[in-house]
Each structure stands twice: as C-alpha cells, then as structure tokens.
Length: 207
Image (cartoon, rainbow, N blue to C red; front, top):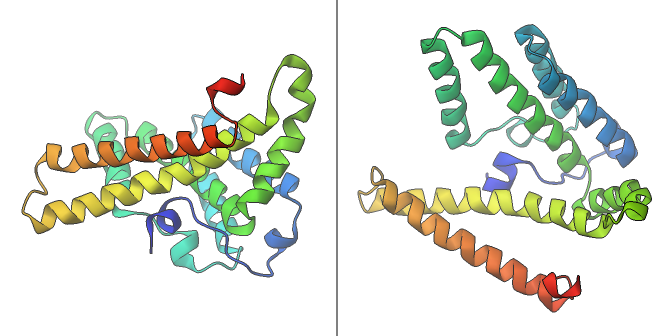
C-alpha cells in the first residue's frame, strides 16, 4: 500500500451510504468527530469517538487496509507519545492525545475515501464564498487545502523511499542520511508546485 493510501486514504469508488451522502454532511460528520475529541480531556470520550470513527471508516466499504491501516512510522510515533506519557505517570493524557489524533485521521479518511478531491475542493469554495466580503479568497483557501492533502503523502512516501535506500546501504541509524534527502526532495516538490501555480497566475504576483 502506497503512502497516500497508508496515511490519509484515497477515493475508493463504492455504493456505500457515505458515497451517496452530500459532501456538506460529510464535513459535518467530520467536525462532529474531531471537535469533541479535541475539546474534551476525557480519555473515555476520546476512545469512544475513536471506536466510532473506526466503525464509520469501515462502513465506507473500502478495504480495511485502506480504511484502518497505518504506516509503521506513524504507529511508532503514536507508541512513543503514549509510552512517554505512561513513563511520566500521565498515561491518560497520552492515551487521550493519541486517540484524538487518530479520530482526526480516520475522520479525514471518511471524507477522502468517499469523495473525489475536486468535489471536496468545490464544496470548500462554496462554503467559504460568503467570507469574500471580508477579503477572504475561497479559491486560494481550497487550493491550499488540496495542496496540503497532496503534499503530506508525498513527504511520507519520500521518507519511506529514503529509509529503504539508507537501509540498503547500512545507514538506517544515521539521522543525516534519513533527513537530508527528504528535505531536498520536499523543497524540490515545493518549488515545482510553486512554479506550477505561478504559471497559472496563482503566485504572489497576482496579489
């Protein structure tokens, strides 16, 4: 499974109720999961919301490896967060933090697995159009979200490729060998994206 699927999920055509549901309602469900998880400090509420988000992700009829799967790097990060807080005597806080991040992750998958990116972007533009009177640019905002969704899996994929290459050379424990190539690839990706936007009149010069 590639990094895009492993991290955020990608659109999977199906006939589930989520695929038929309007995109606005999907955003409402996402916020209904994420906001209480972020606002609450209750470990039991966070765990309950995580269980609910897992059930909802599974109900998309996407393969479970797409709906539930996590990259090993992310699993290690979550384990480190939970382990650190357990060692400091704050296991409830650690569990709450990890659960909250997972709720947001699986909530985003509910959107991305059941809705093509262009549809999500168009919905954001429509939802934020009333803010134009305050100088807000809905199209720029939606474009920024789309770029973010595309960029996160790219960075994750770059890290995975660099890690595999470093392991093949026996350098998997060398932080510089892991981080430096990822930084170079990420900067190159950002410059390519910026050049593409500028070519379409969306760079800084159009302000």
